Amino acid sequence: MNLLFISKYPPIEGGVSSQTYWLAKALGEKGHKVYVASNCWEVEQRYREQIEENELSLLEPKNVELFSTSLDFRSAIPFSRSYESRIASIALDIIKNYKIDAIYSHYLLPYGVSALMLKKLTNKPWLLQHAGSDITRLFSFPQLKSIFIECFNNADKVIGYSNTRQKFIENSLDTNKLVPIGRSINLNEFNPNVNPFDFSQYGIEKDTTVFTYFGKISGLKKTYEFVNAASEIKNEDFKIVFVTEGGNHADELKEHAKKLGILDKLVFMPFVPPWKVPPIMKASTCIVCPESEETPYLPKGTHGPQIAREAMAVGKPVIIGKGVKEKGIYLKTTENHNILVVDSTNKEDFADILKFVINNKEKIEEIGSNARKFAEANEDFESYIKSMETLFNSLL
Image (cartoon, rainbow, N blue to C red; front, side, top):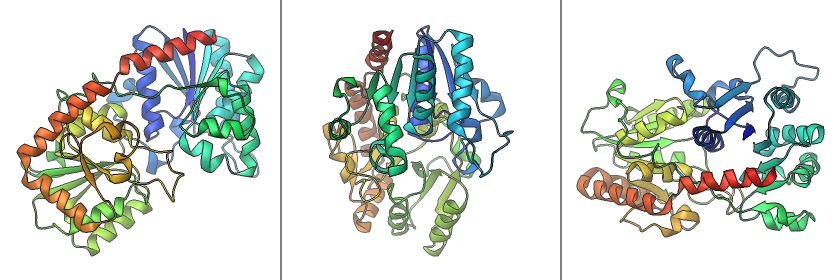
């Protein structure tokens, strides 16, 4: 098939961008042609993954071509980047030039709205996937709700979340369009045999315990709670590697750490592309995903950290928040056997978990090994890709 993807894509950081990359790569390896239309090269510097020049070709794995809007754009008055129109125009050229069979979009704004325009113009089959914030925070905004409803009305199939069906019923949308396909982690890409990243370039010694945090700095992800807990054990031998954003948020976190007397324990790395994540995980002692409850930042049941699943696949112990442990695939995990669970809001509890990781290397390695076994038993990336192939074929 010739498939058109309209979505976030590297170098945009985040889960949706990463999912799109691994999906496109896998479909390309299956022999399909995937053409990606995005605004990825316009992402703000603070949310941009750092990609070395010699790795740029990895953005376009086998049978994948990337088309992005560019910064050299003349805006109208009042100021706007006009992403929906520009992405739609690029995608329209792709449809004309590459005999596209089906369209896939992930995230309603701006990608789903761009895909809606294409559906109206070309009537190509369209598979829409939305994110948690789409169906909750953005959907409830009066200036977006009507166009989002049109997206759902015009898409041929919709991949959603647990609360999507209720939203469809409330707005008299066709629930027969909903398809239950959950993402999965590619165990070939995320595995214990990847070459580890070299932390020595950041001054981290070989035997030092390394806690690694991936993602934005936010209340949802309990970033400050992590630093606060670490400050309780600052005399221990450890480093915290933040693979995160730059700018004001990072500066504020550094200032907070300085006041706690723990700044020397923190190492900041820029966001990295998806293929760099497994080596960093491999070189880490433990991956920390302290997110717990979505509320009050997002409605309950709409968010779960993909990073934790990726780390388990690499064979690394992961610390997750209690709220995460109670949903999704994490319900199947066993505390202190293949995962570590923390009350992120309890500084003493959090500090005790961190100290346990530092002082129990053999047990921690055992938990990491069990985490890989859990991933092998519960992740099925091949079936996920086959399901997506079947879904695309059903639209033709």
